[in-house]
Amino acid sequence: MSRTSTLPKRLQPMLATLTDAPFDDPGWVFEDKYDGFRMIAEIRRGKVALYSRNGKIISRSYIEVAKALEGVKGDAVIDGELVAIGKDGVSHFQLLQNALRHEAKLKYCVFDFMFENAVDLRKQPLLERKKRLKAILPRDKLIAFSVHRKGNGTKFFAEAQRKGLEGIMAKRADSAYASGSRTADWLKIKTAKRQEVVIAGFTAPRRTRPFFGALVLAVREDDQWRYIGHVGTGFSHEVLKDLHAKLVKLKAPKSPFPAKVKDEATTTWVKPSLLPRSNSRSGRARANCASPSTSGSGPTNARRMSCASGNVRANSASLRA
Image 1: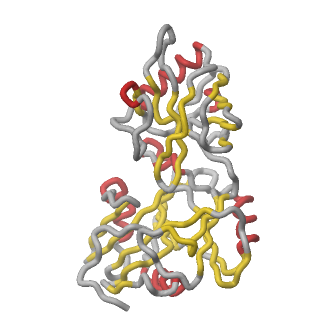
Image 2 (image 1 turned 120 degrees about the vertical axis):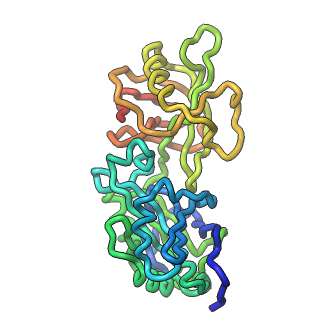
Image 3 (image 1 turned 30 degrees about the vertical axis):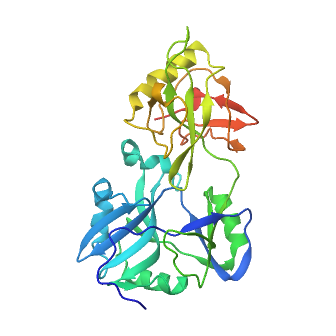
């Protein structure tokens, strides 16, 4: 094993490749796929630094998790997913929003071990890294070791479907940790080919139309928001007024997208988050949707829409805080 003089300040996580179907293979292990965001934890001399997937320091945003990780034995760099568990026992990304944290239980689900006391473990087999990881973790309700199952991916996937989980991860048992790379040694298998679409912003009203011109839609992929289109027709006056009143309370200082999208100059950005319940009737609209099918109308959903064959159904009656 190679040695480094200090632990890295910023380490890009290994990424998984999307695949279509579960499988059985004795050379692979299977884990839950969480609906949260990736977080690297660096523990050095009892001090904890938390990093997002893109290397942003987020320790102050999750002080309670950092405090729990102070109990890790020795120095370490570990990889995992920060999740918020809702009342249904399932992780929900939207509950990680600050305003909604009180509704959920935070948990850092750790699944890989990159450095131990400045020793680089990344070339060690996955199962060896996981064994060493489990041994150093503190007993704390905020920290969870991500358990795995060997070989039987199809049964594990069926269980994930029954539980309402986002999907499963398949990992080659002897794989190395490839920092910053997306490889076929890690695969993600989603339980459904449907995506949740949220509102990321709204454009200025045009001509005689009041309140807003169009809604800016997004889906979440790999811990980032991806723009999928605008929707601006089919809303009644009542729905326009109701949506606008809720969205202005969620204004954000900048775009959530990594690249520019159309009409940015006239767009008011909002935090993609849950919206209050409304008694307004449904509206129907059209959008240019890049994803094949999206939906969501359950009580824990964000401001979501059903986007299939170019149609978007906006049901403000299903919204909740």
